[in-house]
Image 1 (tube, each protein chain N blue to C red):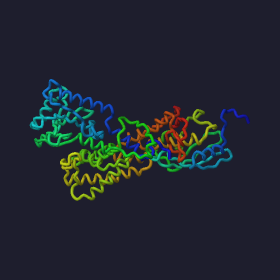
Image 2 (image 1 turned 180 degrees about the vertical axis):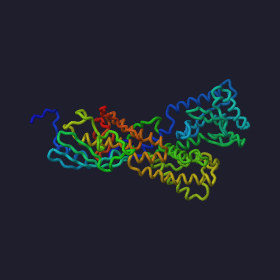
Image 3 (image 1 turned 90 degrees about the vertical axis):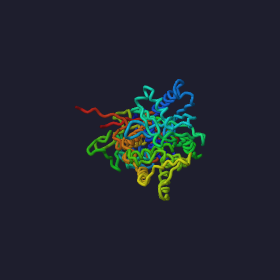
Image 4 (image 1 turned 180 degrees about the horizontal axis):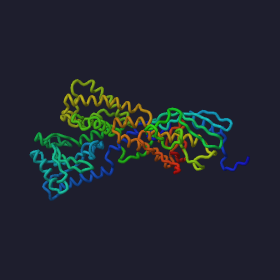
Length: 371
Length: 140
């Protein structure tokens, strides 16, 4: 059947999920705005006449901004974006004094002073209506070297290990899509939505995080993003369809949970010492298990729906009303774009709509009439 | 009879032959200047599959009806966008611009119905009609 609203060979649902995810993602202009803001933060922190000058200071994004798996929060307008402020050789200093030095420097800036909030491991700059920039002071880990860093923890009053760049590299390696020779001849339709095209794994992470946000709605038992991201990437095996990848992930997680006696452990793949899931209690782990079992069923039901109206309804229940509606409207716009440019046609099987190509007959223009 | 059109008007038998040639799921009857054909339409695999019926009297206006499943509304009693009475989709502007008896129903009415059904389902889901179109001016 010649239906080219999405790339042939890829599940039709992927077109819809692509629109859903691009509505969750930072737009290209928001991304550029965030980049400009963190560059400015870096420039201020490392300014030549400042107290942190000459320390080889480096500021770089970590977490969802680095991985391009941001998810628009439901309860507020601001995205949470994380930055590392690396002072490479300050390991010999007291962790709290390093944290204070960065916080103090930010506090001496008229702009940052008013939007600054001290948190356990980071200094938050709150750009109301856009995003939070969480600045994590850090030093290089002199023992392990490479991309490993140490971050001051104000409660533990000690350094805690981390490796965001390493994790980013691991995630990037995991994201690569297996390309089948047979599929190479197909060219995807240009994506209408904002932002650059993301990879299936990135969308899988966005979708599971979004479902978490809908289910837990701010509850403290919600599984951490880094746990979900690690599990998703760990199970991803190069599926070119995000829909198939998500269903495979949920199936695999259900198996893992069933086979696991006790609480599952999710470790940092780039630093086995670090247990991302260490905060899990029986209560929060049970909530995670229930979340995964239910999501698997909900997603299966969503895929089984036929009819854009029924799909919209089910998507509203799973991912939130406004987001689902926007996704369906963007998806519909893909067809409108073909129609407006005279590229819409029909195939032989059940008058299937398709972009003009082999075996597709162009549809003459018409104007719908009536009340 | 002198044909005054540049393109000749198609007989109902010709219309049916074109319908069957372009749309394998359609079948019908053409006799006595009347065409009636039925077939299946599924705009995309995400859409439902619909049983539809096209009726046409020679040189008059073709009409399309959705037989199964029946068209639905978001709220009881509301009007489905771009329909005539009896929930009949309004697929083209009255007049000669969009449709005329020299045009093939197979290439116009039937694919337009597929496009209409696509927007109808999206409307049913979201409440927004994205297919464009014009409304007749109501007499005050």
